[in-house]
Image 1 (cartoon, helix red, strand yellow):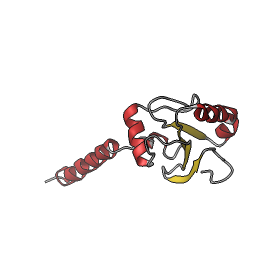
Image 2 (image 1 turned 120 degrees about the vertical axis):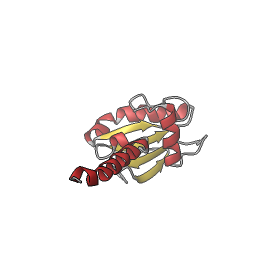
Image 3 (image 1 turned 90 degrees about the horizontal axis):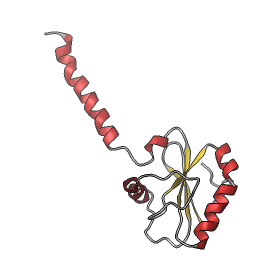
Length: 132
């Protein structure tokens, strides 16, 4: 018997583990170890428009920190400068970060490069306190 006979199960196991890992990938795994994220969920109405406008005004500060804005708002995109995932990933993202349906106020979740929640803020985003 040659070495391939004994190493074949190890090779197959490693390939299967790699496939299972990519199937179990989360909605923000593409950003892991690359970007810090702010997951934003805005309610409908004038408050959402004000917050979205403020994010545009603070775009330079956000870009300087290498932060990506992920718009996880229900139903439609509300942050023009944010990344919008497909609807299935938005549902998964909202579940992952426990964003309740019909939240009446803006929610900002600062996510580190490791994919973990670092800070949760409501109503306004303060990048100076609790930034990733």
